[in-house]
Amino acid sequence: MLEIIEPGPQTTIQDYPGRAGLQWRGLFPAGPVDHLAFRLANVLVGNEPGAAGLEIAMGRFAARARFAGVVAFCGAGSPAVNGAAVPRWEAVEVSPGDVLASTAAGPGFRLYLAVSGGIDVPPVLGSRSLHTMGGIGGLDGRALIRGDLLPVGPARERRLRVPQSLRPVYHHDWEIEVVRGPQADPEFLTAADWREFTSARWRVNLNSDRLGVLLNPHDFGWAREDGGLAGDHPSNVLDASYPLGGVIVNGDVPTILGPDGPSSGGFTVIATVVHAALWKVGQLRPGQDTVRFREVSPEEADSLAAHTEFVLEPAQLERI
Image 1 (cartoon, one colour):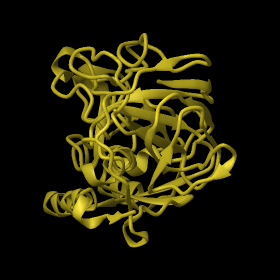
Image 2: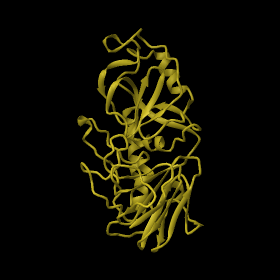
Image 3: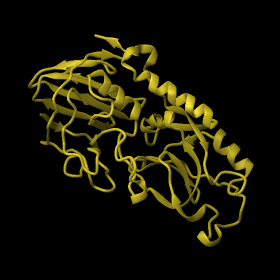
Image 4: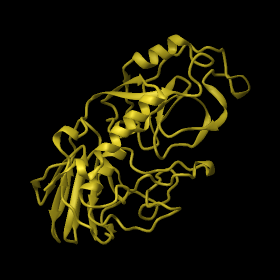
């Protein structure tokens, strides 16, 4: 068991890839916002990459281990065991009674905790991930609270470390790769709008969360006067599916859709964050960080994805 002492502002149970395949029923997959740090933490302790673990917002957290095993912290934060600092990006042994804790530290926004054996709560619709908007999965369909007891599965322990050269680098000013969305230029945005979108430095709004990352308002020129049958504003379209990581424009506000966001709606999707860059969205610090978008081709997006998966191969990691 893992006993929650202090859950921080929002700690949730997630697995990867969450509830894939249910978007046609109106449900985004949930799962970790930073899939790279999450999966690395699992690999370091001997779990399958997608095993259930904890996503800790702002890195603020404390829990007591009631098991002997191995844990790994990956992402943003300052972790400690029994008050002594422990490194991120490598597996650490723990004993019954040990207190695992972390304080907020940037850059970056989310910390991930994997335990050998994984968090063994019952799956809902094929996943243990909490979908915060839908209130399903996780533990009783909610974020964790003080006193929660989380069951831990049978361990297949392994102690690995991510080499320094392969560790993700966090910033306060990010570059995120995107491909053009179905409502980019020239029918919706103007060519000048697209150039502004991919050259501007966007500020991350304080109200960003797992549903979406809101950016600062921007007065796009638009290639049309209104949305026609869909509405008065040129950002309006007839309701259609949204992609995970899609950049929608609601009036004048661009928003990057997170794993708990809406699966469809009536706003333009001007771009989509590529799979290899989705982890960066999970580390954007609300109210502080900035983003610049870089357009890539689908072929380059595939190459970036292959590089991301390369880091997760145990053969590329160091044994402790």
